[in-house]
Image (cartoon, rainbow, N blue to C red; front, side, top):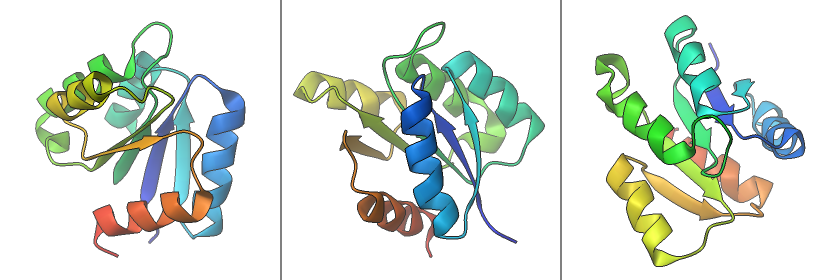
Length: 122
């Protein structure tokens, strides 16, 4: 059974770009356009890893991660932030919210897949 990755980004192009790389590597992918939609998905599906943007409407990535970490079943799920925000304060806030990795866009697809596999222990 393949691992299921949740991609959360308000850009359809970015969601599709990441999904293509991950599906090509054998992962199952579901996606959401913001943190609020993503929270609904984690209640409906088993998720093995989350990739999220920071700047999104309705619920940003920091708030989404904080909410995920409050859920007993998702306290230890690997979370990767993929963002254009490159300031040290943004990264610090991401790790304080509960992210495991912070990557700056644009992401090399091979690098993304390697990091996903690393965090999943594959």
